Length: 290
Ligand code: MN
Image 1 (tube, rainbow, N blue to C red):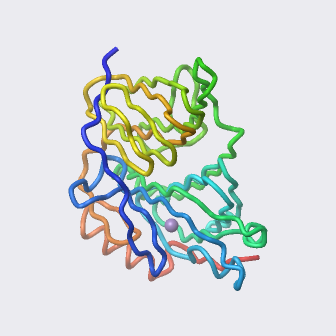
Image 2 (cartoon, rainbow, N blue to C red):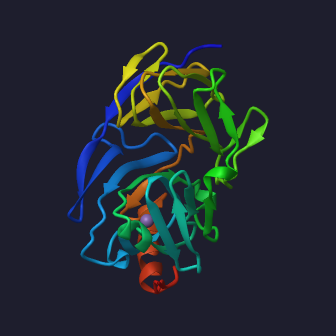
């Protein structure tokens, strides 16, 4: 066993998404990606009582070439897409979409959550796909909280739910396009937990809330993304308050990344093709239904 060290602590910074403030942990000016992880946004959206849910959130827009993933921390997210999926995810659930060759989706709060005055808090993560998988048919997956294998810490204070990858003889429910290990951890002050990370994976941890002590590094404040060195195989954490975090690890793709808005490809030519295909309707159409 060798402890992994934290190479970099990256606190979130606020960006403007069409008039709505969102916290961004990745990319930063210095870190373009943590291959295969491209982007991490942390959004907290107050319900607007003066308009219906269908006029809130994010309206129809396309994606190609990667997986946009939503972790629902609080509230509800109604996903609709051009492949006919229409589905609500609740707190603790994950919406994992491989956009593949192209899909159009919308992500909005639900009418019930607006009426209840509920805050919508989500983490959105973009995971790149290898070039050979970018043009596969899209694949939408919703995983309710209770369908994720749970690993409890020995002290019983922390629980880690396995979302993707294989861990200690169990398999996460998500179909992935490359080798990943994704855990969603949550628990109480004083809890300690250890993770074993496969060799050669890039590893990052986003602290959603609370404070953690990372053995070998020290205290970490909430809303910080930690980038670990590749060396070592063990991450040891202690919750210093009630805490929630995402452990994100994956085998690097080591391919050229060309991103333009909602498309992530390997070349400028492929980006031009994506724009053309979207305009020609090859990613389908989404007429939202309520
Ligand atoms: Mn999207």
